Image (cartoon, rainbow, N blue to C red; front, top):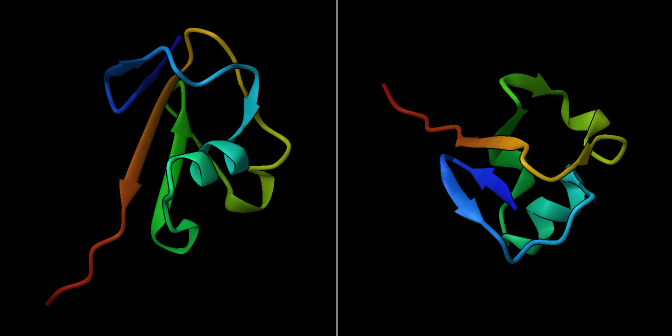
Length: 66
């Protein structure tokens, strides 16, 4: 079980890299930022960081405007 944007997710098996999680969720990695347990993870490190059981993952999408 992990928490994604404050929602419990029991379907995703852990440990899993952030890269794999983003792919499973079908998200465009160019437009999002990811934090694990309130720590922002640089996109270049997504493949090295493993999400484990009970981790809290926050995914935010960049929105342009003016």
